[in-house]
Image (cartoon, rainbow, N blue to C red; front, side):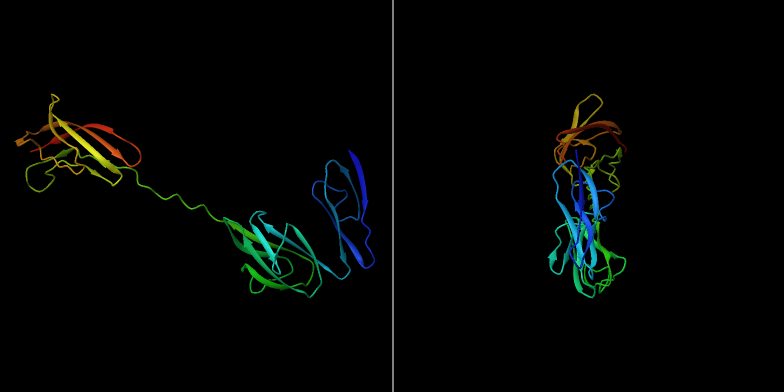
Length: 241
């Protein structure tokens, strides 16, 4: 590695301000006119100077990818951005958020933007050197909308006695259930009732024959719009008279 020494010598009526380097660190600091560093890669090195009667305004954005600052109609090319300005000059600022960010507020130590530090656009008059920061806030991630899962409710008993209360065995489900088939068996496995009507109702009969009280087995096959096809459920229903 090569040791490099640099001296920034201002012209008449100018003052050295600071060094700007992309890939190196100078010693003792970027604000010293005489510096040195160890050269290890290609770089662009800029010595900044300012006139005796100029002031320095440093523009920053927080976070660094939150947005940009438009100064007098021109978008600043990078951040932090230094501008040497004359005292008493009037400037307009606009904070433009990047995608997924919103403008929050301006920050400054010695200036106030008009109409407000909370407005994304405003003006100010240069009074003294300062750092002006546009603060942006990341938009919250929208909550995942709730999607009701496919739901199927199966009663465990019914009373087909024509009293108008729980007279039929039927299933209750939401609109996520798309197809349904049911078989009801006696204890010996004989099929007593079957239907592929999703809105079936069983009145406790096998054909026209009233069945006695007891426990009957069922097999239910259903499909839903979640991609579950021919799911099977086995269980028992109690017929009470």
